[in-house]
Length: 389
Image (cartoon, rainbow, N blue to C red; front, side, top):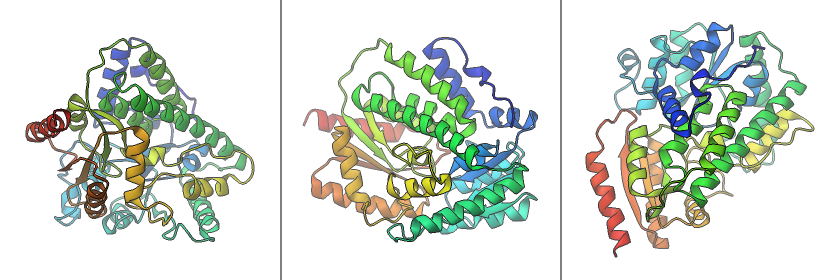
């Protein structure tokens, strides 16, 4: 396993320095953290959205890299896809085709028809293994945990072959401990967003969270610990703003400037942005069978998403619960353009919000959007109508 070293861009300085450096690092389409890891001899396991058991790759000493698209034009990847597909598929392939990111293994999931085909498309263009991880279609089956444990074991063997390192139960338990700490820190960050939203804006919290998808979680834990300490001591005004839940960022991510535009108008007190990083809600047990523990946590102690079907978690009711528990006044319901799961759920969400008499704002986005003036004006009008109604 490689020696762990902190990301130099994020060491020392003030909170403002840390947040600025974090944003610069996140938006750098050369992915310097990944390049630095490879230069040191490390292996990289790329995985597509939404959820992936990163502990397995981490236990092999690899860097799990979240393929969440990028602010790049899909000049090479465009010819590998049909026209009417979401942007994240194309830009995730683009960063690999152009050498911005070099992988040793790529894993996708059948969350939609297009994502399921990503393994085949990657496999035709690269020599490294390209696999599909089949998460349970029926999360309510009594056999789901055993089935998923078998899938995780298959993934473990694939990771071992790609990295040349054995994944032991002891190693998995160590990785589970690292990720439990990471999830706890993210819960602290989101509690701050909910309880004292003036201390951390939606875009600042997003940057701090998203960094975890491109660095080892030991390093991310240190970044979060440092940022949370600095944020608690922050002295800032407390403007009067409405509290909203942002829904629709489970797979393709809205541009950071769009999140910042939303944050200028209201407090985003909860959201589903990069929900895969917060999918497991509590600590995964470290004792016992680590693969079964991870599988059980995915099924029994987890959030919700349009790409998982679980009768115990009807998504409309889960959204209303998120709004209620965060004390939100309204919802912003978005969907990525050409995202079939997201656009379908948008209809169900708005119907449920109408029935519950919860105000909401509906929009679409694309990761490479650069102009937000029209959307910001519409959102400001929506907010003013609520505040002065």
